[in-house]
Image 1 (cartoon, rainbow, N blue to C red):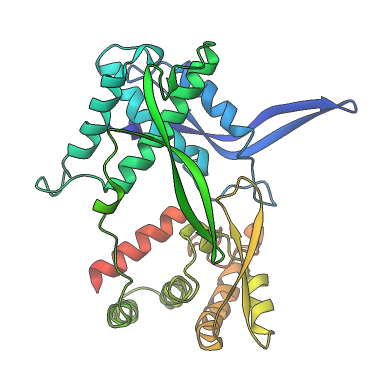
Image 2: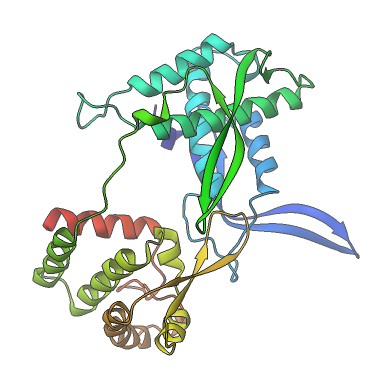
Length: 331
């Protein structure tokens, strides 16, 4: 059973934070994940863990809206640990009673699982398997704390995790951090990374948009989307959160800098990325089409740059993935 059947998202969840000054403080989430066993009953231990994570990864959007309809960062964690929950169900083993061999076999299954579309290839890359494994180790370490067994997931515990140092880079700064690992994880150097999309293929995608039978609004929006992805290197969630105000501010700058809301830090974090004037002018052409459309939907007025043709509401990150995929197929 796929993890999609185990993880649901609940709309507009308010979680208690604290009571002070006669007022109840809450964390608000546009979407919040909820994990079930395959028989549709709630997996309490997993959901308690998600509640614990919610204290670190709070709602970040200024208007109380989380762009990612799958629950953002916590939703990704839920998807990862649901893989382990699924195996526990299959073998009728409580997560607190799994063994190191059980976890090792779990990782091996992830590595060897075939791609349903290409059975001769693995379903996931080694880096993805490692990320899933690490999140599951964190989950198991928390389970140990929950049951008062601090050695449950430890170097000499039931689940024999290890620690290793990795070098991470952010804003051209290198930082050495410690992360957890397991002897069953695939070696990172086996990973095959994607190469950047060539200028030639980007031109083919833009041409595919212009040759499509889409409306002028959609053509303008899709070209603007491809331009932003190419010239900013932003994540899909950052592009979905981009505002017209940010674009107009950049257009007025001598050395344009585009403000993007980063969605990976558990709180609002705005970063600025340089973008050339030629790219900005390409996106500016879309603004006129957007302005015409949004006048037809005054009830849905908003500042988000990329909006739906049928509702004028901001599009979701998943929509961006779908759009780019279809353009690629056409090209």
